[in-house]
Structure formats: C-alpha cells, structure tokens
Image (spheres, rainbow, N blue to C red):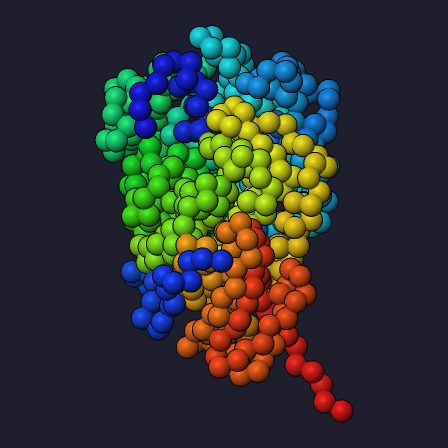
Amino acid sequence: MKRRSLLAAALVLGQSLTGCGQLNATRAGDDTVQANASKRAPSAGQSTRAAAWQDEVVYFALIDRFANGDPSNDRQVTRANPTAFHGGDLAGLIRKLDYLKDLGITALWVSPFLDQDRDQLAQTGLWGYHGYWTHDFTKVDARFGTLDEARELVRQAHARGIKVLMDVVCNHAGYSFPSSDARYRGWFHTHGNIQNWEDPWWLENGSMFGLPDFDQSNPAAASFLIETYQQWARDVGFDAFRVDAIKHVPKSFWVQFNRSAHQKLGPTFMTVGEVLNGDPGTCADYQNSAEFDSVFDFPLYYTFIDVFARGQSMRRLAERFAQDGAYRNAQMLSPFLDNHDVPRFLSLAGGDLGKLKLALACLLTIRGFPTIYYGTETGLQGGAEPDNRRDMNWGDNPGVTRLAKQLIGIRKGSSALSHGRQLEMWQDDQIYAFMRQAPDSEAIVLLNNAWNTQTRQVPLRAESRAAEGSVWTDALSGETFTVKNRALLVDVPSKHARILLPSAPRRKG
C-alpha cells in the first residue's frame, strides 16, 4: 500500500478499518489431490467450531446502506453525499430478516454499530457512517438504533436459524476518542502515521491516517478491548466476532483475544479475521499462529477478479487452490466476491451479469463458508470506496437473485457441497472442474469461463464412488449425464456452470 494524500487516505479509511484449450488440458490424478490437510492437527475446540460453522452462508450488511426501518433516528443524513449517513439502521435489518431467510442465508455479519464520531472529519467532511471510527465502545450509536434493537435483531435472527457476527475493531479508536485523557495514558502508540506499509512493525505500531492506535502490549488497553467486546457478545447474544484489520495488531494479542473468547463465550463461538493481503502464507499465519478460526480468503478474491471479471485462464484457480495446504483448515476460510474494502465485482466485470453469475456459481460450490456482500445478489455496482457502499438496490436484477437463492439451496442440500473435501478433476484455460466429497455424498462442478460452449470428457477421480452407468443430474438445468468408462462427457454453455449430483436410482417393479 502506498502513502496517500489526506483526502484519499480518509476516503479509504473504512477499507483498512473499515472450444479450444483441449490440447493443453491437465487431468488430475491421485498425486494432485489438493492439500487441504492441516500442517498440524486441529485442537478439539477448533474441530468443534469447524463443525458448527463449516456449513454456513454468511451475508454482510453495511447497516447504514442496507435498509431504513426507523426514519426517526435519521440524524445528519444526506443521501446525496456518498460519504455521509444515509439512514440505514438496526430496525431496517430486522425488517429484512425474512428476505435473508428466503435467500437461504444462515449467518449475518453486521457492520459496527457502536457510538461513532459525533461530527464529520473536519479536514475532509467525511462521516463515520461505516462504523469503524468508534467514539464510545460502550454505547450503540443512536443513528443506528438502540441496544434493545440490537438484542431484538439477534433474537429474531436466531428464531429464523440465522447466526449473527459482531464486527470488532481492536486496532484503533475514532478521531474524537479522548485518547489524551490521563485515564488512557499509555494505551496508544505515539509513533505517528504508518511510514512504510510493507513493514510489519509499522503496520502494528503506526497510526492509520491519524486515528488513535491502540497499544495492545499495555495490559489495561488489552483487557479493555477483550472484556468490552466479550460483554457485548454476552449482552446481545452474538455467535461470532468478525475482527477488523488484524494485520495491524500483534499476533500475541490475537492469541490472547481468541483464547479468551473461546473460553468465555462457549465452544462454538467463532472468530474470523480480516487480513487484507493476497498472499496465502501471510493470511494462513493468522489462522495458524494467531489462532483465528477463520480468515477471509483475500488471495482467492484476487484470483476471482482475474479469472471471472477479467477473463484470465482458469488455471489460475487451480494454482490458487493448490496453495490450500498453507492453512490449518482451508474448509474454514471464508471466500467472497466483493466487500466494503474493494470495488464491486460487477463493476470490475464491466457490468456483465453473466460473469457475475458464473462467479457466484463458483463461490457457492467451493470449499469454505462463503460470504455474500449486500447487493451482490441484486447486481449492485460500485467502484472504489465510497462508491462500493451504495444504498441497497432492492428488486434490481431478479435473475441474479433467483440464481443466488438456487445456488445456496443446492449447496445446503448437499453435504458434499457444504463441507466435503475438494478434489480437482480438470483444468485448462477455459474449464475448471472439481469434485466435492463427503462420507454420504458426492458432487461434481464444471465451470466454463469461455464465450462459447465447451465440451470435455472428464475422468472420474479414483476416490469417486460413482458406479459405471450411473446418471448425474445438473442441479441448475435438470440435464443428465452418464458415467461411461469412468468418465463423464459434459457440455457446458458459455459463462455457465454444471453442478452434477448423483441421480436417485430408479426403483424396479
């Protein structure tokens, strides 16, 4: 990351805080099984949390931009200003829970709702609508709603079988936080702004654009952060923490934070960290060493953009999945197509809904538990921040929404797709195919990134239990394909996916 002007820095603050190809095809043999195994065996607690979370489909709602359920709390709202408050609130989220339930969502990540800086940032006129500039860590921001509404959101979500993740910020406080008060002496770093964004020391000890930067080596500061967020989890009933900007905080603190959360908040309470970095080794270190249950799969995100939005070779997917062995448990990664820190996928894809649909098919069939950013399922566009945080476009692009709902339903109906191991079957420039396998089920996915129909004869994996002559049905189209000579001959339309599931055997008599 390069140094930026003050205005540019403020604008991105929430980001940190906030037919051919057959000739060279490669077929996967037994020696190319992807290394999803851990470098060390998971603990009993990690296994418990993986079992509790590996089947989830997460939806990330930016409160201020999602739905306005209570206009009476619309203070300092200027909808024409993309960096101001727009009126979305907890009450709006509550009203939209049935929409999320119908979509098939099983976990809701809610952006921070704690009390924010009271006024706009003087130098730029920006507001803390995103929730990452906390003024008071013990109160709900009145512009988002009330404590009772936070509790009601979780209660009603749970009633619908939806877990809720609280967004946690431990790196910094808001600009107006009274960091100079004597009671907070020694709580914050005093090295000034980050001078080298490639230097881990500066990332952990420098300030992001003037924000008060917590020094977690101070026991009082560390205890405050750990205990405050645990109190919120108990008081409101959260099921997990989504943790912001974890590369800006020492891993030693995260070990303390995560162990305490697992001990005090229950064996299935999960922590997922944000490491905005495209290197699997760097991201894996926070799952392996800092003891996060999960991290967001930023390396795969960048591959999604290159392959599906920009049309690069499908071999890039194979290369990325081949790096899964870096992680303690790749099944507990959370892949995504876009979020509040990066441009919208659809904008990077030039508005092409076909590219978005194919990318969604990949996202919702691969290993890990996927996260969907609000509006992705309605074809919401947006460039760099704040444009990637537009108001939710309710009702737009219903075909994309129907496909997302269908894909989630297919995933939830197949144990192989929801948590089975992933084994590569085919890769070339246009086609990528893989098998997902659970003890009780199998699924085969073929993805075509070409602009015309592609046909491949794909050999079954040696691990497959599919019988000769067995029939496989595409869950998306209903078309069928038959195993012959331990292979499937499959045609895949342009920018489409085939999700093949074993057909139920016909009864005799």
